[in-house]
Length: 120
Image (cartoon, rainbow, N blue to C red; front, side):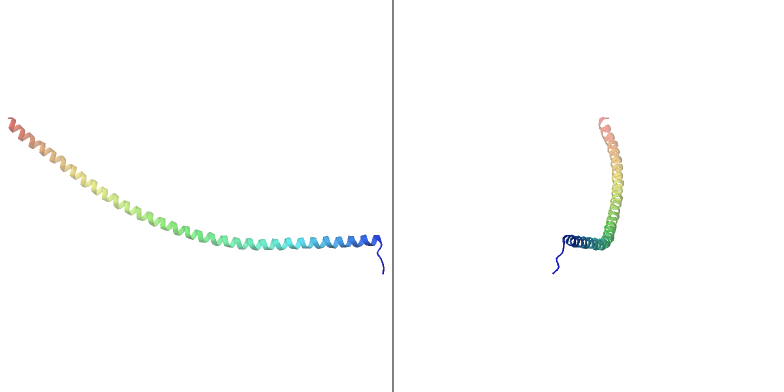
């Protein structure tokens, strides 16, 4: 059996080291590419989900906005009806005040006539 001398051993160690270093470099490069492709897939999937969520949220917010607008219109209608009723009440109160003023004037006139007749 042939034995290896020292330069041959060092050559084999060097070749083995180069092969191992090359294999590690190749596996690291391939692993990096695989991770990059996987991350791009995750990014696309996540982007699609976010876009779907954005559309769904926009639709829900629009529905809520429509409900608020409907409630706002309902409140506006009720406030307008209440304003009309208050204006009608103000008009009635104004008429009652006018009648009381006239009544007060008439009572004062009658009082003057009655008490003036009693004094004189």
